[in-house]
Image (cartoon, rainbow, N blue to C red):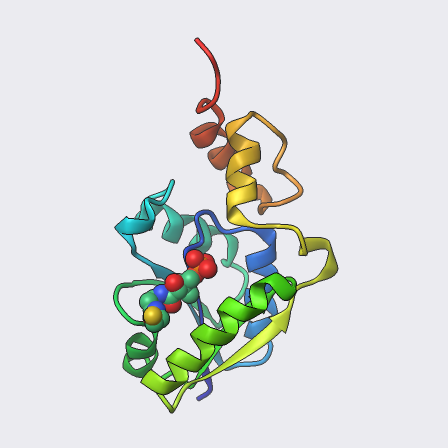
Length: 164
Ligand code: PNS
């Protein structure tokens, strides 16, 4: 069975992430969306909230599972018997960091390769931090995140920049 991992912070999951997850699900028997639990990054949503939002947006993709992970991605891939790490590439600016991560992960786990999927053009500018920034100023994020989690994100982040 060909198992792939789609790792990330998913704080929160966006339509760009979902596009990569959907396309990966057509290439592998099983895709594990792996949510990094990293308190140092000070995420806006807890790991449980991020997990729950992803579960809600992948309900109609049968071969996708979602889990949290801590520690090294290379170790997690070994634990899950996954030989592929799937990452989305938006622009040249992503490349240097992702290239370095791919090399390090392969050094730590030579049995796992990283493959890059080019983002769909409509998601080139999209990132979780942009979504959070727009939502925190009360902006419309409906073009950027799946519909079923849009209200929850807006509600959670919407009041952050409102003056008294
Ligand atoms: O969505 P992100 O924040 O760009 O995802 C980054 C992620 C989770 C893929 C990356 O931070 C990661 O793999 N972290 C786990 C720690 C690790 O294995 N680091 C590489 C060796 S330094």
